[in-house]
Amino acid sequence: MQDEIINKVANSALEVFDLEDYYPKGIRTQIDIAQWLIEGFLLKEKDFRESLKNHDWHQYQDRFVAIYCSTDAILPAWASILVTIHVAPFAKKVVNGTLEALDTALYQEILPTLDYSIYQDKPIIIKGCSKKPVPMSAYVLAVQKLQPFVRSIMYGEACSAVPLYKVSKK
Image (cartoon, rainbow, N blue to C red; front, side, top):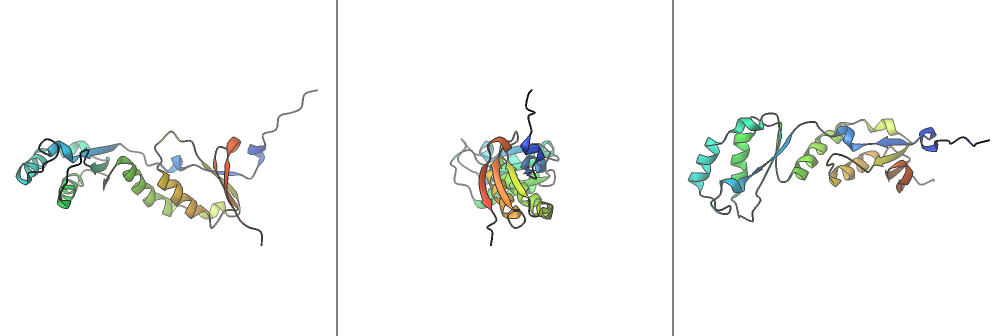
């Protein structure tokens, strides 16, 4: 007689918190200011303004946009601001920085709006493997939001979770 295999994870009270579930749908695009600099390093204001005026900004319609410079050029603060003024009417969101900074900003908007009370006194596993580029900052923010409600927090997958937090028994 064979013993029945029991899925202890499926039968447990363990709740999975998957940040991918909150990953905003939409195209992410980077705008590299270096494309408008002389040899990628020198900003000549008149030429820069003219290039921005002639750029096709419609291509960023409904996109999430990160503005950055791929070179070590020393740029005046207004350069990124001026690019933002041109792209903002078309984009869903604009940030100064990398695509990771963009995703961080998106999670900083989304995570505070969630109802974490549904996890009250429950053991939680924050899913670790993701197919989408969830930034580490999103995990850090999620833990801060979850901790006041949950009984315990683990990270990873149910089969190999790392315990991170447990409410102390008083």
